[in-house]
Image 1 (cartoon, rainbow, N blue to C red):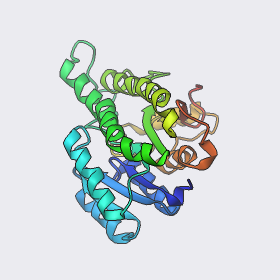
Image 2: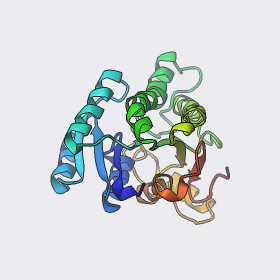
Image 3: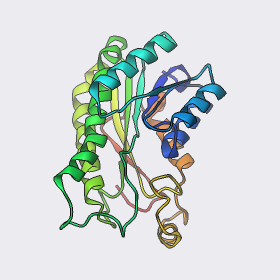
Length: 253
């Protein structure tokens, strides 16, 4: 199925990386379900700008019932079910190495919050999408990870542990759902310049990252979003259970 034929849910799709993903999908001609939690103004503006392509809907993706309502509303709006899901939403996190919780200060609650935002949210959207994807024998699920799992240069314990768990879930889900024509993959970025989550990062850190990459640049949200189109396109129909690192070549595999 071409991207232009798909109905794609982007969680957290109205700001930061999510907005870049939504915009890339709009440019490809897809119909986009822009999920938001607090970015109502931005989400509704997208829907006003692209009324034929965008449906904006507020839902807490960690809440199973709200996610189910989101899928029902999207199906009613477009007259067809969601074909693809990009699990992008990030729960209350800032990339600030000085302010991160150290091991001695880390709490189970903090870990659980990030786990809910990464793994439980992906479980909720996958379960909500499953029946319709099985019925048409087609589905694309793309989970957003981090290269910190492979290279924890800054020990963001809660965030990285949750994304590592999401990587495991990506691979186990790919194994189980492949027989139904559902591909599940992950794209993992480094620090992006810039998003709401990375705005607290000092310029010196961005300069160091740029100097360390083969491309001598920091990946932008638009560049990362463009790579997501690979996993949504027909060219990746035989690709599942994979983790593609998109960071300008900083981290290898």
